[in-house]
Length: 291
Image (cartoon, rainbow, N blue to C red):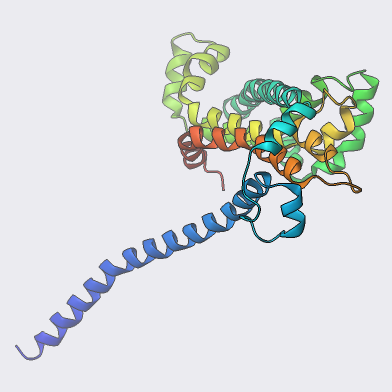
């Protein structure tokens, strides 16, 4: 009895430590996530507070977000004096077109690489992989020469077409389609379904998480694009939100409140998209295995 008591005590201690271990890990994760959330929310709060102040109070007390009182004058001034409505419309049309074409073409490419066996398949996969390594800035000059020769500069298509060739989106669909059970595809083929019918009627209806992930990421990347729209779009009303906001900054006379108000109006749609579709983003990342 005396020799077994310490063993029981040690076992009970080990069991208690094993139970407390996951709780401590969860608390540590929750603490880290809270700290990161606070760090990310500070710039948003600062931009919002600055947009509600006057330029005089911002110049006199730049580090005090509550000095001088708050008002919505900067928002009304920015909306009345700048073509923000046109910038919103341009960004929305370009982002939606990019989403539609990217989901359509990249899903077909991922389906072909996942199920079809053809000559040169390995070379295509290698080229798509190489596309992941190329920085966007390295493609600016060749793309500019190409679209200038096609007379597409200054049009929406000059911004939509480059976003369609997205290697990341191809790999998202490829990873998802590879997880579909092979007997399901074979059963559809035995029943006489063509590869197009298998893609449209079997694979795409069950690939909604992957399609939602690609659509949301494409929308965000297209909305936030700056360098390529700056080079392609030359008229003020045809500019997108990031390019239009950059044009508001004047080195001689910076209107801080108006610039911050325009910035808040620019990223509010992205926050709304993420809050509405955050479940789809989480499911898509968990299903397709993106890291």
